[in-house]
Image (cartoon, rainbow, N blue to C red; front, side):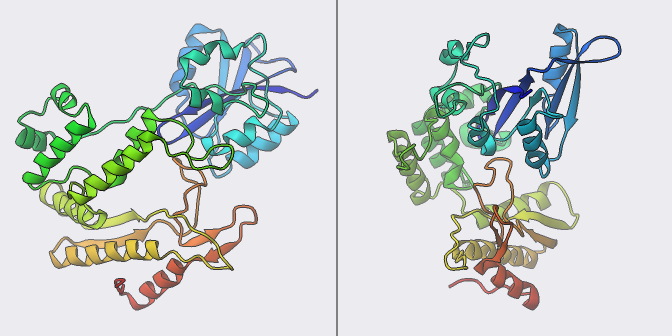
Amino acid sequence: MKKAFISAMTIGAMTATVLAGCTGSGEDTTSGGKEVLKIWSFTDELKKPIKKFKEKNDVKVELTIVPMADYPTKLKPALESGVGAPDIFTGEIAFLKQWVDAGYWANLSEKPFNADDVAKDYIPYVFDMGKDKEGNVRALSWQTTPGGIYYKRSIAKKVLGTDDPKKIGGIMNSMDGVFEVADKMKQKGYKMFPDEGSIRWFVQGNDPQPWVNDKQELVLTDARKEYMDYAKELRTKQYTALAPNAFKDLIRRLRAEYTDLPIYITENGAAFDDELIEGRVADQNRIDYVAQHLQAISDLNEEGMNIDGYYLWSLLDNFEWSFGYEKRFGILYVDFETQERIWKDSAHWYANVIKRHKATLPQ
């Protein structure tokens, strides 16, 4: 008999998790007669909710953690056939719409779930993400991830006269307040943010809807236009540290405040809108980015910072926790349908860097 699955999704600032359950063929039981709830996940984040659930219900719970690299390929066949399928499973937002429209999940809009009754408790965009093409609810959010600004208390006291979180929060409770603080930081020789993208999450949190609508049209809301204006102001007024400069400052602070041990840069790279055109990916932006950081490392070593190693992120386009397969960080382009690997311009450039042990900065 074909099983129907119950699903729920988790929306965070950068990630989402889908939770699903299966009904229809009876419950497994242990030798003690207790029902067994089988859960699959790629992280251990459900351990605390499971503990709470077990305290309130006389149910045995079996949690199986499957590495993300194997998760979709192992889960999908089980869901489609119903054989060996878990009762509950988690999943990333990258798979959400595909799984919601797959047709093997229970309709939560129907009785006894009546999911539409709780729509008022959700941000509309988050609630609608769990609907199928017919508008039936197939998934519900069960978690949210807030975001905020963190700061070094010694610098706050020096610049603002206080390091108290409540007072700092009051000072920076609006964008005008943020820019006033940024100006004071600049006068004292500090930068407010590493780059302009640091404020983008505040825009997403206040305006949580897709950048592209169902008609494939770009949605530029007033809030997003304001973000672009704010980002431009941050750059033009020099309130942000360009990435290589901020990188240098971080290494210097590590040396001054923490350790004399050799330093290895284990992850440095950037995602861009890579396009495969006639077998080539021209990613000059990535070449510029990496070259500037390699130059920064060279400069730092001339200062005696003792950076012993550098690892580029990443060799291949891969699955990112925050973005799924949407963002491409690799120097090798991956066709995710065929798994074909194609050298981007950055790969050819970086191979030459390795061969010559020297990077030529873009002019």
